Length: 320
Length: 59
View 1 (cartoon, one colour):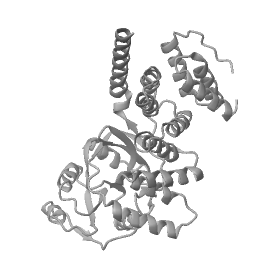
View 2 (cartoon, chains in turn purple, brown):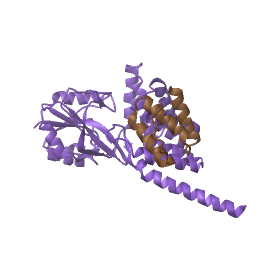
View 3 (cartoon, one colour):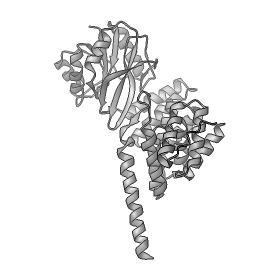
View 4 (cartoon, one colour):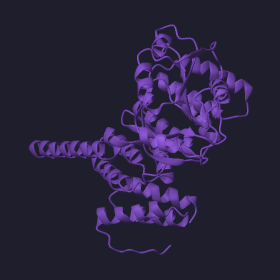
């Protein structure tokens, strides 16, 4: 066997079976590290004759994953989350791991209508960084053609993540990165005021880069939908557009904000921009893509805006 | 063209998204900073939205 696939589990009885089943055609070593499941996760793994190594509750996911990497005896490494499954690309993976070329490969990760790209398969010197929301340190890789992972997002213990991030902040007081992950965790928890405060803090320090632009986009959404701050939201979306004008998501949000404040003509123009510019976005870029924002959403909103404007016109003609 | 022009062009687009000027300035900015694909996309937008056939590359 030339491939080890690592999975870190904790109470994933609903999803782990599908995850493991999707990996079986690869004929790989599946290394499962369980960090305290109290449900049937371990029993399900045993059903597949996979040994699980138990670990105590941890405060550094990267350290655990790097330990698994060290223990691996194969050339190629892959990781998958217990709430994900490999939907396509098995043959391509087999072909890749039969090669001795040093490389790393991006897979597409689909979650709802959003597709992101992450390095999931590699045989170069690489290790994980960040105590939580762990990620690979080296980001240079080739794009796989067919490898697609579906994600259910599953059960992430957000409170546990916040504790880890808090410790991370204490260990690295000068680093802005913990603020990024802390703000995203608060966003997932629906704590919008706290999210906005921390996002502002992070964006004050880190102005450029994909992480900053995406965080600014989320901040704009929160400002528009939850904090009733449309002007601030518009300012933030414009900044995002300045960096990535081909992201239909940004134009759609600008359209949504104007739709919300009943400026339908402007909204239509922004949705049109989403359709035209989004269609020119390069498939090879590594930014996440919300596929619904490239056709379905803007078309639906253009129709709705036109309908409202037509009804308003009729109403006005009757009442005057 | 500096960052100020980027902001100006975006504000122009925000104020009048159905007018050419802001998009043309934004395209010039993108060309200047080397974002060629993005500039080409704005060119296409100008053609589709405004039937603009003036394929000017002047900065």
